[in-house]
Length: 236
Image 1: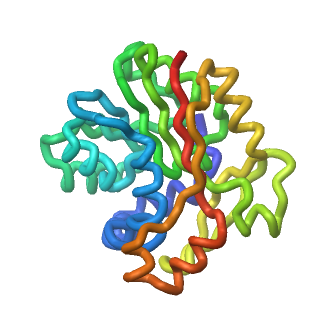
Image 2: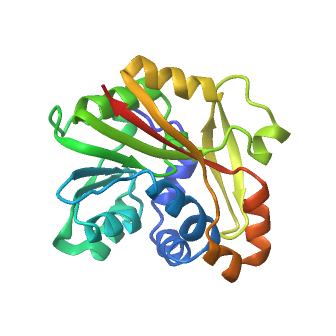
Image 3: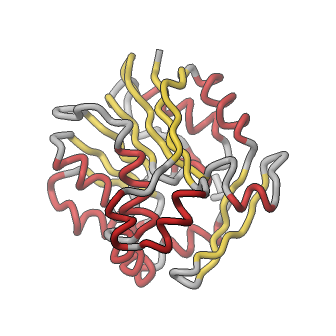
């Protein structure tokens, strides 16, 4: 299947960008002190849990999950991201090139306890395929944890979303634009329901206290605007 946002794929597959991206997200306000800690709070004890990091990027979350005692399989559609993840994780995780737009044919039913997917679903064309595959590879009672753009973010308020569309967003920090798929929030919730998931918890991302200390100006923006939303859904 052709990737629905080829421009973003080409950006994420550029080795020089991937190095810049890794250097940034390890300690920036938006990832390290806002989205990542917020989404990670939806995890319980992951000791000895089998986790699929779906859309792992350069492997930052996978590294944290391994530190917490999980057995991690890290997948991404970008060869450059997987190469960086392999460099970061070494032999501590299995890393594989997988395009989530094409499902998860390499994985058996019920082979994971948790699927973790950070800021990835807005690159996927067919959420029924994505969530259906996440449901299939989870064991009964397993959890899907993911984050995505908040339906009440400033960008959505400025340009309301009434149906699925491809948008272009500009990242000031990298001076690049990316293509993403925007859709009404109900589309996401209904797709989860059709796939068999029961939504267990939804939370707005919140900047940490360290964000306030290190990035006070960004902190004020993140504190009083909603940019990312975090979801935990269970396989019934």
